[in-house]
Length: 296
Image 1 (tube, rainbow, N blue to C red):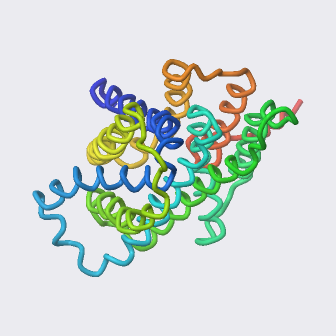
Image 2 (cartoon, rainbow, N blue to C red):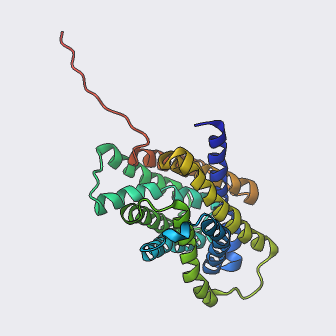
Image 3 (cartoon, helix red, strand yellow):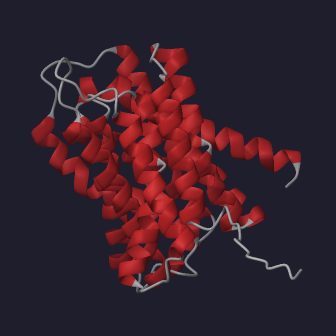
């Protein structure tokens, strides 16, 4: 991997890690549903001209319903759930929970496609979920607000990502990633924009929240997806998806710098467990245990 693509990979991770911080800022002002409706609308307005300019929209025939389903499970539902989670959880913490996505993808593949889970992969899943427990260990106490619901929302959002990844693999293999991402953003907008009329804020959001929404839609969604397509085209999907392992670090970093979020030892340990579990469950980290006998 050349330095150019390494820089691009880190820049993409910084954008996606920053998305949780922008949601943390804007969600209390806009509410999760309206916030995500605006996010996907802005991203759609940026991506649609790209699709029409490259004439990729001509390849939509026969795939509209399937892309719409991906838009619901890969964008609308998880985006709203993560926005809801940031009402209570820190942006950095939510970014770490997002890193469980590949683990859920492996679980869905096991039950849906009957893909084999090796002993190492199963061990990785256990380590990953132990990491979730350690991550939240110092946050569940009687002096703080109950965090079970927002944590569950973030984990369910990651499960939705895992479902949509497997659905895409089964039904949309070979479809342009640009077309797929644009279609999913547009589908989510079509669903969420009318629904957001029932969740309008009682007062005008502040300027910081408005700027956060614009940056969230423009940079963290529209531009980020374009960068992701570029990395897939030049590095392949396996190397491009390695950005998943960088997002928690940037989420924690931006949260600490911009929002003064505290990074505790348990968070770092939990994050380490989760990333190790993901690496083992997805096969990124491999090792063999060999037994040898010596004759004397």
